[in-house]
Image 1 (cartoon, rainbow, N blue to C red):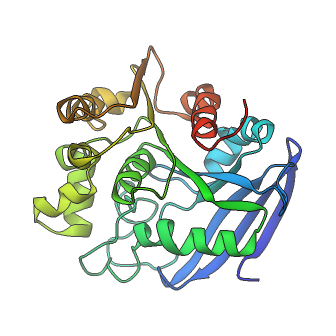
Image 2 (cartoon, rainbow, N blue to C red; image 1 turned 120 degrees about the vertical axis):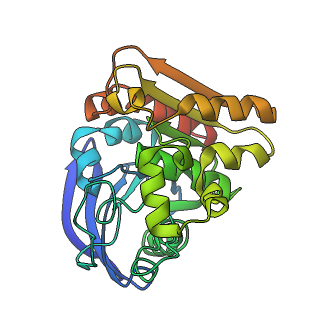
Length: 286
């Protein structure tokens, strides 16, 4: 088997698997968590929701604090939690700041040295990892997949959804970095991974990508009004909302949640809504 199982945990009637594997895409070992609901069988495979985590996180943070699997289990929905970057490389500058390098891939395929050989997270998340998961677990349905994420992972979810039309049935995000080419986090990451050409940055920016989107967006976004990163201009959901309106795109639900911050208290509070959002577009009864 391609995966090494590090732990199997029974939770809410299903199985939470802590897995690792050697990735030819990143050239490193990669960790992930996978929740399989109790109803999943090869005869009746479960659809899958991919959750992309934010800056500094591992697959364990949301698994232990977000409790998305509590809601997914009842609906018969599987959950996949990839890591946020390759690990164990010790590239020059990789561990010097919390918002670039280790645990801060921004889910792009890097174009600059020394990152481009290993920091290939778009390819990993959209190609290698799902292929391996569906090959290994026939009780999961490769034809029914949605994507979600928080903060940097919200950026990843929105951009991968729009860059790979048809791959995912819906998208949702908690406090996404919605216009990264115009905020400090994104400018630092894109400059470091992609280079100085800001036209290239636009290819990884949800606010730019939605301008060419066709059809309904099937998108739910929650942002807390007490989120300091929102107040500091790191998230810019209003720019994304305006771009959606200007493009005449339908299917966006953007909610500003009074008083909520950027933490897992916020994620867990609205986790059920995001799981149900995915379930709706994946054809699950609620």
